[in-house]
Length: 469
Image 1 (spheres, helix red, strand yellow):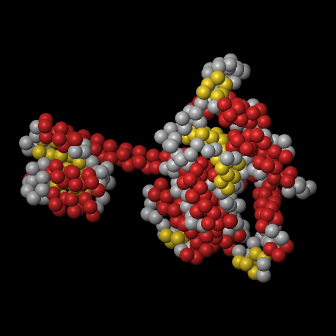
Image 2 (cartoon, rainbow, N blue to C red):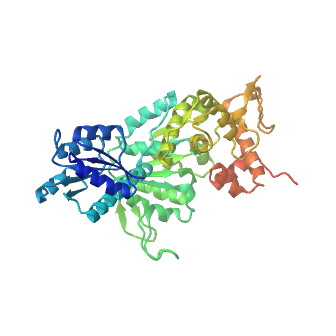
């Protein structure tokens, strides 16, 4: 039910308007002066204000101006017994939705109120959508690694230097790229993103450089590529380690000469693009294996920013979790839930194989399934959405982890370095998910949020084989 406020010093007008609007199922409050009206607007949330222009103590135009300062989206309908075109124009310039003369025509009044409320709803919805679509999330955390990344972004962003961003899936490489663009001199121009792993190798060149009509069977019309779309701005090549060698050669040429040629075309197009690239692969190993060009690697790797895994900065988890909590509750239109200190400690004990992306999903799950206060018990109960024993319930005992399935119980003493432990944990996790999904690789890749090609590589790397039934 919409909540309306009437500000008018004539009792008869207030009573009439209130009676009409309450009959239409609006919730209505009224006051007889602008000072009290402004006080109510500050304290309560109204969907619409109907305000007289000529009043004692404070003029209606002044009420409108002051209200706009702290509640700019609140629609005002101005009312006056001395209506003129000039008054209506002045009210509109100061932000009023509409102007109605006294005595108000019933039909016009109701239509104007409905339209003003619809506009207010549209303004609110538009702001929410813009925040979801365009907001670049802050890089959260104050650990040494994160502070170093923030400092590097501040130094590098205003330059034209190419940046290679490395790190595991879900660690926030895209976020680093967005901030490099946001803080650059190209921020007013587009940031175009390309996920090289999601595009088939035979189509990647068309995606990046465009193609001419008839250049291949399905090329029924000319297409502009990502390099041209990013002209004057930034091109972010995500998962560049999965790009085909032929496409790498063309990207190298574009970086060297600042020119591209569409597939099937002959004319060169000049492009002014800053390239940022990201990968979760070890590109030096890929070069040794013949999968990546060394000359392209050195072109891209002017500045290297490595984004650490969430496991390497668990001290940042409380801050990240709180931010996710507030954002998700706001998106859902619900009061922000609280999270206990015990719950935050329990979150820090989880393995976070899915990195920051998994933490976001975990917080969303806790918001949906928990009461007003998210507790340690909730984290333990909902850490594993597929059921079974939860790793979140684990406690450390003599270098091992208790209360977890035998397949993931670990004796930490057997590992000589951190990489050995990471490889072991990754292998066991992938094996568990493959067996759970009956060795359906596509479903498992979706389940753990990695590319299918990456999963095949992991299976080969760890020598995983399906056990005979």
